[in-house]
Image (cartoon, rainbow, N blue to C red; front, top):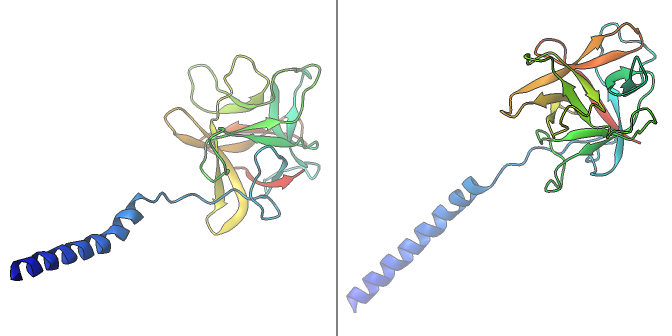
Length: 208
């Protein structure tokens, strides 16, 4: 009889030890999710909704006519350059169907809600890198020679401030570089460029 009680005691003790250890094991398996990307109203970005990208930082020599991110071309044909300009064009976030919520650090792309008669191609962001070079490269759209993969990420511009973000271009090795702005011959247009050097473009997303 004593042996039975001893066995029951050992079983109960073992069961209690398993219960005490279980929460720590479960906690190790829980994946910590990144914060959701928010619009100017503090609401999470919605898949399928349209947004205007507004410049959120003070950029030297930024023209007061600049309203947001739009399209520009010297020949009014493909490929268009993505730039800060006086005409802001709304965009949609292009993400994997497996992604339910758009979060900081997710791989994604951006697609303009625009199709001109001179540029029928899909208006998805691309990076035109010079041959044999990694950077810098202009952010363009409508170039059929460049693949439009989900190669961008959104990161918070300031760890202590939500709602202001920077955009990064990431290669297949997941090496990411900030999108910055570059002056052009037009004082009211600043091209978006992927480069290791320069002040990152800070943006807010306003639902349109």
